[in-house]
Length: 337
Ligand SMILES: C[S@@+](CC[C@H](N)C(=O)[O-])C[C@H]1O[C@@H](n2cnc3c(N)ncnc32)[C@H](O)[C@@H]1O
Image (cartoon, rainbow, N blue to C red; front, side, top):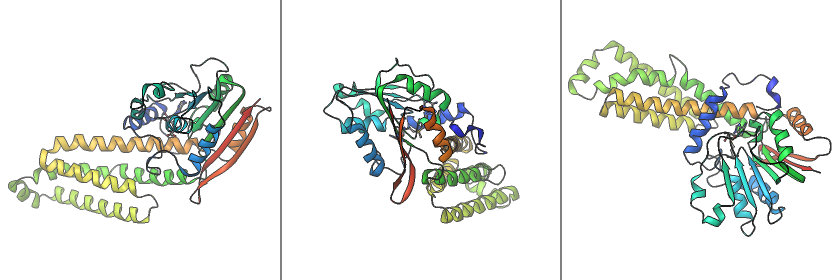
């Protein structure tokens, strides 16, 4: 995690293995980047402009390293910004990554980008001094900086550059992640949470498929109590969503649970239980990634400590990056001499 590892981690901070799997499953969906709900295509606005500016300064045959690349939004932006050149990009990520967009490129363009999934920023599989530029979008801060920054310094040429957009502790993505993590904790709460209430409804829903089952349910006190708890939970979800600046996750959950209930009625309890387990796993993955994000965010002191790791000779330019009036992160440019 980041420089602030000595600071308390969020109570829901997951173990590394769960986080790695959560990211792996996320990239397998084919999402281009980690802000899929904020940017429909690639990063645009000030984040896109930052990267176009960074890539614009590359020489025609430079080699770029993308740290914690995910499915490669930066490599895609690089190819779009410098379509004429022979610039190449090595993209590394802890999770296995195999972006669908790359396979659709003509061979010559495809050959300019190589993905190294299952690769830690703390142990880069590259020779010394081979890359002119290292970049990272919401990435390096997820790694152990004590191991990853020396690796960057090793693989970067001199002069060399590092550019990054990094999570800011007071940014909108971090605030929304905190809010969504609370939705998730509510949904997963043992006993009264949405999943517990939905689980208790699976058998009654499957029995409601027949006339005889419905008659039996009408006098089944346990089933009636389960339905009452489930309805209360649904009302809580609606109230939560109305109060929240980011209710999408709750709406998605409501729809997913409705499909589970329909599955119980049509295909029986076992099929519905399997489907509900899939929904719960997806929510746990969301929780793991959000906790990872919050643990990675850098406050002012953590940013200063990160910059110090690049050494006294490094030149820094760091500023808050805003989009539509919201603080989105730190824009970081470092030059190594
Ligand atoms: C928020 S995502 C950003 C991905 C991509 N740069 C983007 O903008 O969409 C953070 C990524 O960091 C990766 N990651 C976490 N720890 C890492 C490490 N130690 N080394 C390499 N990648 C790491 C995760 O697997 C995840 O794909």
